[in-house]
Amino acid sequence: MPSIFTRIIKGEIPCYKVAETDNFLAFLDINPLMKGHTLCIPKKEIDYIFDLDDDTISGLMIFSKNVARAIKNVVPCNRVGITVLGDEVPHAHIHLIPFNTVGDMMFSKPRVELSKAEFEKLAAEISAHVEY
Image (tube, rainbow, N blue to C red):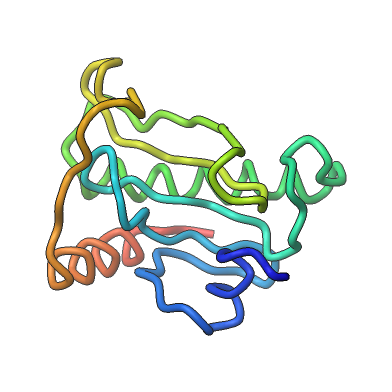
């Protein structure tokens, strides 16, 4: 059974797309820790990030770096943090989270709520700043 991320890649489930290449996709987390929390995924469905081949994992990191720079240009923050947990969805993914203090990156904290219009606007703004 395809992961939810594979279904997003195929267009079966909508997302707030931030960036896309032939091999990677970035979209806003719909249950964000902070405004601008973005997921970067390889289009190849591999469960565990360290099972990705060298070209894919290095490409994912470079893609994520470009997305993180765009997030930083749009969302007021000190930095954009990166975390890999891997338990939520059986598809390798990277969380990019804008933060001002380390507490902003705690997955146990309450989530930020955004309207559909806010998600759409934010995705468009970040997307406009992504450079490949």
